[in-house]
Length: 214
Image (cartoon, one colour):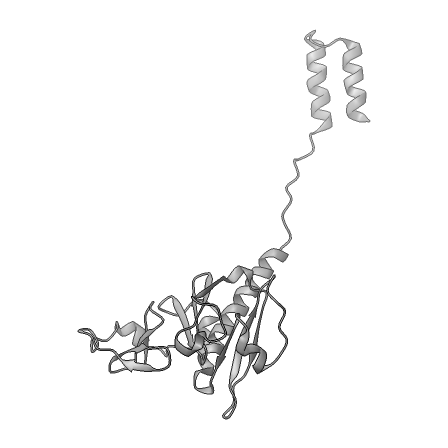
């Protein structure tokens, strides 16, 4: 089983820690390279779409390694990172996207001979409907191989669940609380009491009573 940390470019493969160098996972050369993560992080597979449907990965982060970039989902944010050759044709630096701004997610599955891609739709970004060639230059898309399809399936499930929960909350009818209508008879009795005490004249009493009964 593998372990996942909050560092998306570092993971435990069951024997040693690996670091992502921009194109491949390589053994880490450090004093802690052979120190395994806590047992709880090794107890379940690092990627399970069913887990993503109810919450984030057990470490608090989902990570999907693509061909031209990597996707990290942590809390309410999605980050598209591009390292090495993955930066070609794209802006420099990571792209951080709040999940609340994502309106849709599109995934083309990867096959044995062809890559797939995951694309998120954000209001204000150029609309993209093309295939693989379009995804290569899309800032909001990451291409992946079949070997990493489960990672992107987990990300897709998490985003779609997040969107679904947000839409359900927005569509819930708002409860409108109306003030209870005052009891007319009780108010007339109070007015009569004020009249009897000489605070209201008979004329004032009749005027206010008529207004209540109107």
